[in-house]
Length: 168
Figure (spheres, rainbow, N blue to C red):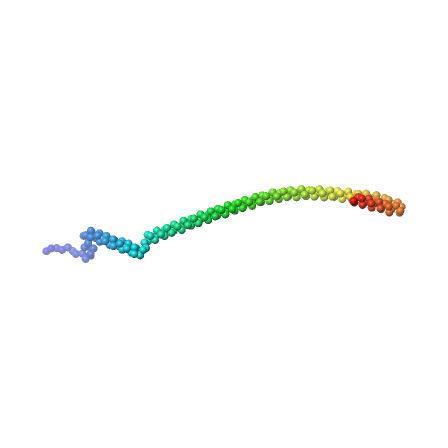
């Protein structure tokens, strides 16, 4: 009798002795899957790689646009800052001019104040001399009064004339 070896029940065990057949079957399955994916992408018109590339380009375009906008805004800020600096410089120059004018005006005020003081002293001196002149005239006018009653009106007339001349 011929002896038969133990039989295995699994189908993989049957192919276990034929590795070339297993590799060929796996290759056929991989080729069928790749072909079906390629046909499906071609039929539907969408490819994830293409979409990713388009999305990447859009992101790059947006980034470039945002970068350009930032550059423009930065240039605008630089221009605004320069204008502010120029205006500040003008204000500082005007402030210096005002300070100089104020110092000159204060010096003029001091001079005028000194002149007013000098004039006030002169006026006081004139008042005192006028008061002393009036006192001497009234003393001179009071001396003829002791004379007769007839001479009295004449001396008053003379005193009035001399006062009028002194005032004029």
